[in-house]
Figure 1 (tube, rainbow, N blue to C red):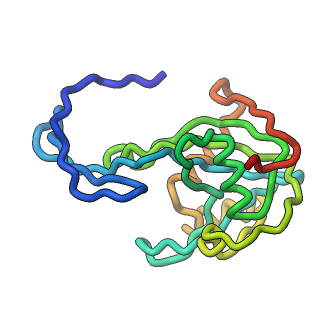
Figure 2 (spheres, rainbow, N blue to C red; figure 1 turned 60 degrees about the vertical axis):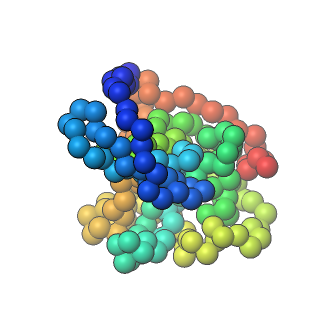
Length: 195
């Protein structure tokens, strides 16, 4: 169970804002002094995708801040007033062209809680479905390819640093622990992505 300390927050100064996030400067109520952080406008989703052979579907994307391509679990943002499951279904389809007949929420992760409020729901998608071809999408230009990996290949990707982002590693860890009481099953319609 999460505990939240109720501390006095000072009036934050907005340093930068756009439709995705706001950078703020605030007074740190615990340690004192100025504190800068990023407040995201909406949560995100991360999807662990397994085929009937147990292989993992990953996407390869160029990440400019680190200057290289990485392999990652499919992921993305949640539109305003969009349900997390619907967002996960949409992101999986947009990034990979794949749908899934079974969905289970594995938990939530917070990325860089010392610097952001960004939280994401993590889902397991199985019973993969063939989907109609994707049209032109901004998501398609972000992802250079998608590919299935077996357990040995996945280990090699992690050890080589080709799969190195916290969101993917945390999602895979939640999947490993999914036999615990922390997950809930969500059945999705057999036709895949809800629009």
